[in-house]
Length: 325
Length: 270
Image (tube, rainbow over all chains, first blue to last red; front, side, top):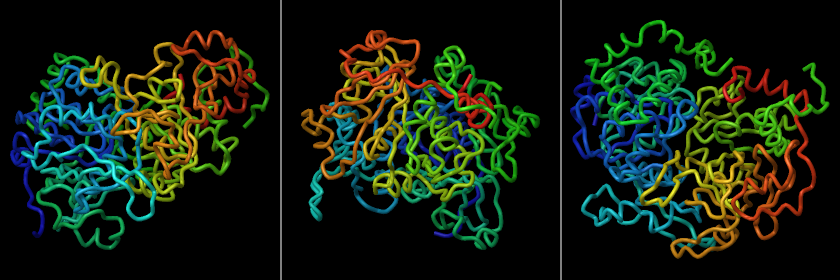
């Protein structure tokens, strides 16, 4: 495969069919592909199967819309700006969503196996916890570990004996191989080379583990520019299938070097997400009430966006008000 | 710094200040610390400014030995990576640093805890049909599993200090060994991967530690509380026979550091 194909946000949304298994770039409230998340809700996607090493605001936007059938992860919330994942919590407590919990490190193990073409990855992380309680294997309880869905492993995990050094019991975690990786990246070259600023999270692993990859780029730059410092790049262009150039497409999550987390926006989403009616009203205003990303940005307004804009030296905004002082 | 090392008097500091200061005092100079979001961040940054200038901090999103000058609000915050030795990702943090054995101290929070130090951050009620969902494990159990020492920072409430937690998210000293579920000491469950475990729990009322059997006891009680009051705020029969005294209050210098250097924006502190 060669260069990624440039498409629009609407076209990117249309590629995702109901029931697809998705994974995302970013970490909790940083570098999430929010513009495409909104577009998936706008297009009314259903029965999505999310595998993500951690959730965040984007998870809650999908969960609130009733778009998620299966959520395999370890954490959901909005960090300091919303302490719980209210929509996922409703889904789990009301049994409208299948929630399969792993630990963070175990979820990374699953993704590593998927990324490196291995059937499983060993780990000693989080042994002796209820994450491993067979009674709490919810995909098994739902009868979904019967092999009929190639994206769902036959077991949640297994315990093996170290065959080489006599280190005893260790967990084997099955590979996660999503249908799609939906990634937000700082810069993408015109030939598809991907660069992210600062922490890399699990972005490179998500790209490798997925069958197909859509990248939302904050900006598209000449590949020759990114190739002068190849050590800063996380993926070559041939691993990327589709590319959408879309500035501010991670908002309200943050993007190192471009803009900070929009704390007030997330706080008000979190407040709204505490009830289905509150979520619906919020979605009417910010998702269905705008016809796309440009209208969304116009609604945000330049004053708000300038406050969030990252200081070029520090990589984050030094003007945004975060605390009580 | 103009403030002295004299200790503040009751009324001159808030409960959250003492929580952060008591936690910071658990850091040894040179420790490699793996910290979670919130109070653990305040505590490690205060420790680095005071008693442990050579302590190093790792955050699970991938910043290794960052030197933030603005308090992060998430372990994935751009601020965590400021002046970092390495800005990598989760694979490096969980496997390249933690699993391979670099981490001395885990600095974490929790919603509920039991007498063996097992912590729940996942659900209230039966997992298959819960009454309430918390955030979930995050990296809490991983970091706690393989660090040499763990300090939990928590709110003291009767409903949070339980005989048995509803869900063991993060491993204490006595655990189910899966797939059988038979209870066993942490040493046995982790076998050759065992490196240590929960050393202290710090709340707004006291500092707790664990005996040879892995059972929690009250070590020091914060000024203004009695051991009996702490016991009343515990659902299990808390051992208060080993109380070594009162928790040392914050010094004026520690308070100044907290409010002017660590969290001047009022992100976690009021």
